[in-house]
Amino acid sequence: MSVKDNLKHVLNTVRQAEKQADRVSGTVRLVAVSKTHDGDAIRPAIEAGQRVFGENRVQEAQTKWPSLKQDHPDIELHLIGPLQSNKTAEAVALFDVIQSVDREKIARAIAKEMKTQAKTVKLYVQVNTGDEPQKAGISPSETSAFIEFCHNELGLVIEGLMCIPPADENPGPHFMLLDKLARAAGIEQLSMGMSGDYETAISFGATDVRVGSAIFGQRDYQV
Ligand SMILES: *Cc1c(COP(=O)(O)O)cnc(C)c1O
Image 1: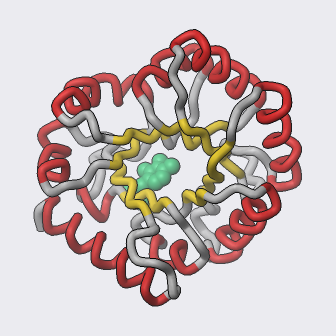
Image 2: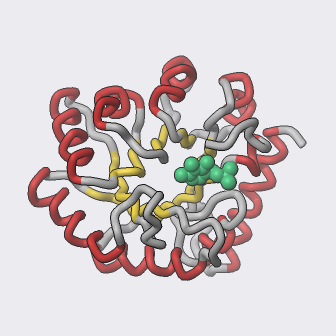
């Protein structure tokens, strides 16, 4: 199967899942996760009309996206992996959405960079719904306080919440928890669901699904 065919299939599945969940058609955004794939692999997806992409590493994204974005200025690039503070300037310059805001230090650095560059990036807070020690993200119990901190102390607007459920668990309860946290905070964007569970995520209210291997094929290495 080609990237073009895969993309078509995933988009059809997204539209079907919207219908099944009684959601308005077109309300779920497909973030095509292109990490580990180069410009030649990504271009067919752009040619097929895909405009929203996700990358998990700033440095890797810098090797391919500046030129692709130059050719297609309407592309929206999402950072979905952890951000180190020494990469904040590059991240704010290149990305349109940062989905992985996960600690005060990085929120502070992003706020400062947005001012310096006079650029607004949309921000999501990553929530560690399973409270897994090795995983990035704010603990569910601290999410509301963290959002208030971002808003009150830094003047940041948090537009979404993002989660990656534990690999070995049923994702449903995690999606439900993220939705509940978002509602409590008056937040509308919910980034949840990957190749294996995006239909489930849509049934739980996802507005952004992050799909990589179902579009671009298996990755050569684990990241
Ligand atoms: C890699 C990645 C994805 C996509 O995963 P697939 O299983 O290939 O769809 C989604 N979200 C994040 C945060 C990722 O790092």
